[in-house]
Amino acid sequence: MIFKGIRNCAVKAIALIGAAVIGAGCLTTYAGPAQVNADEVLYESLYDMFKDRSGDPDNFMSQEVFVQKVLDNCDRLKWIDYTYGGQENYLGCDGFVSLVFRLTFDTLYDFDRDADKYWCMYDYHEEHIVAASPVDKYEVFRPGGTTVTWLYHNYVDEIVKSRDHRELVEGLDNEGWIEYLNELGAQPGDILFWDDDNNDKYWAHIGFYAGIEDGYAKIWHASSLQGLVIKQKLEEITCDVGYLKYVSVLPLTKRPARTGLCVDTENSDAAFSYSFYSTPDCDQYIGRMSSSCELSEQAYLDDFPLYLNSSNGSFEQTLYFTRDMSPFSIDGGENAYTGQKVYQMVIRIEPVDDKTGTLRYDVYGVDDIKYYGGGEIRNYNYVTGDRVIPVIDFR
Image 1: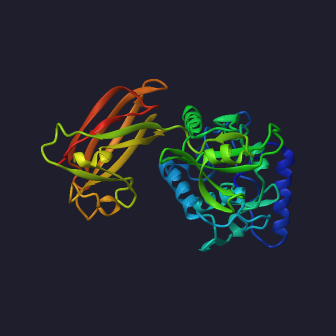
Image 2: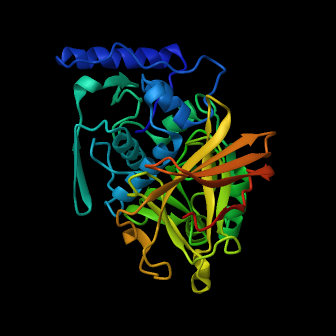
Image 3: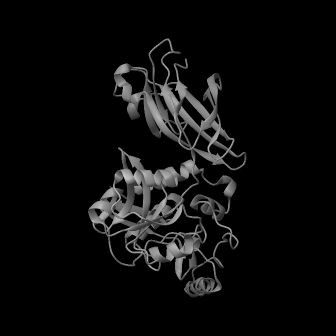
């Protein structure tokens, strides 16, 4: 399935034997597995590990892009049938996670979907063998290539440091899930390993934490009970079903800083409304903010993640936004962008300690680089986050 961990000579021997067998079939393979961290040194996240294995870490996608791609590919596979078996194109829980990563890294030779089924091919020239199964250069298995148990024992606190080793979640309701995940610092895209008993030898299930949506903590997974790939409330698994009792969380990324935006009507002379995007092309819609009292639910944009820039030690994020043509029209949304001026808000947090830091935000025109305003907030708690960045009429 997903990734691999090679920690001893026995597993290395299996990998090399497998490579020799494939080579006998006249297919080109790599000589051996990709490098992993030295003994006793753990990656802080799967992102760090994948970035290292990419072969070009300086040009690897950002953490923000990585998380978004993973979640988008989860949604891309929604409603595909759960199928049993070990064939390459089956889609059990482990195969689902594998396929999401393969789509994220574009390491499929071809991929197609027809209603509730999928089909894909692989390029043997771009794969090598680990534990007798083909993997891509990131050491992501083909769907059906390994098991949840193998992945758990080779990755959790062996290659990647887990957020926790094992937690009893049986009977946990939604409020309990949110409290637990927030205290843990869990982030959307984190891997959830599941077990049905306290025996560490066997792990039963795997999926992606989907984040908090409409007030509910959710998971993306291929569910055998539901019979398909689904985004499901976590409380339905621990309260309604109850057969999965323990969970372990493997981080997709390090815990980002958090902040939020609020409408500032006191320092704006005219009514305004902005649509926010995560890309300068305005093709990834985030939300809308309006100074209209009638649209009070659009007075805030909460909980923006800012990922750590390892080169300078600060948390950084850039948002893009356009002024809506009709400030009070609820019909803005994803169709609000019509080619008008694009602004960018550059947000940076310089940590002072592990909880607080100095937040700085600046607004520029994307094309004219003109400065439209900004500010600084000291002693900001970037772990919990808050609606501290004011949005005004920037014209």
